Image 1 (cartoon, rainbow, N blue to C red):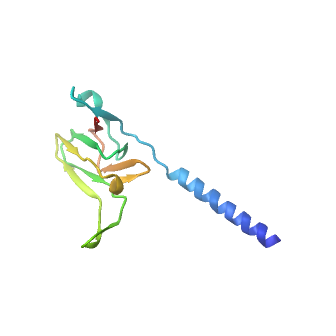
Image 2: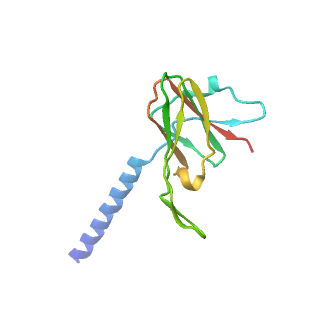
Image 3: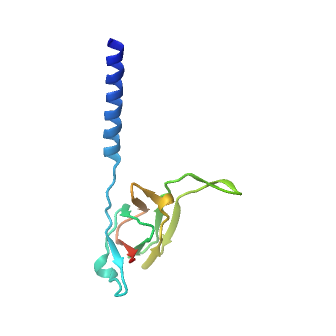
Length: 143
């Protein structure tokens, strides 16, 4: 009987550790999203200071707008959540992160982002090589 109790205790501890690990790694959106309508969008008031790791809610109709006011280019990396896809007639194809260079003193629109490729827990992640003097926001196309 001692072995059965020990197995249950071991399983309980493993489940608790897994739950704690999942909670520690859970992310929340740190970039706001504005619905783009026929009346337009004011980037100056809608953008926020970027961080080097940016998460946003992505519904497949969302694009990111990044403004680089630095004197040097900044690289944005859209983090891939899927390593390979199996395409009929081609077999498995490897996928990798996508990078976009935002030139000095420029605004770049990137996206939309495929849900099954870039989402994890409903969020898409964009890493920046620098966040100094960089603004970001996301735009969702209205239905």
